[in-house]
Image 1: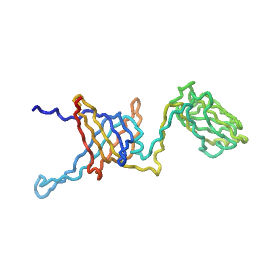
Image 2: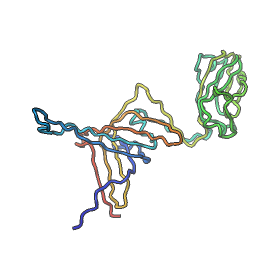
Image 3: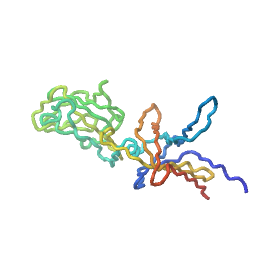
Length: 294
């Protein structure tokens, strides 16, 4: 009988995370740089006397970790590693403008200041991604600033007016119970019902999402976050000899998710997860290899 084909593992295909109790899947990742399961035992030596060599060696603990270099940010990472479920929004055909709120003092968003902010009807295509700040320059006028010009090429192109990120060439006049448009940005500010009387230097903020097919958002760092164990199935690439391999890690724990941005490159978050013994399944992980017939 000839020898078998060598048992090899080639490449990495993907991973799937699941709830350890319900076994319902939390999500998957497909763009993976590398995944390495480290399972190196601590060797405990008996040394003593004049011997230069150990008298005896026993196996100590076997810490087991999985190191993964990813090239994507699937939503389940935020739930499993940051303790927060990410909100996935449906498409917004007219974009989204958050409620304007006072930042410095309280004269901006008031009956005698700004009542609301909203998309300018018919100009939604000019709405641009970013965080906006409105600053009073007189009791009735204001300048508007934006956090980024990454989306300024959308619709009718616009640009910053100075190095302080101002987007209004001249101050806008806020009129009682009337809307004033922020030129070139598809957004209008409506004055309050009272006589306009803002305090110079006061400010307010709001956020804008342009017309989109989807969006995600999450607040990380709240004191209510909970980090739960989860399961993880790692599958190797299917090679030419049809020898498929998978690892089912029963009980995994991790915390923290690096988010890096590098010039001209895709972000590659690297995470290290700790594998634990699962009492119910009496093991740490399960390895399965299958040689498909076709």
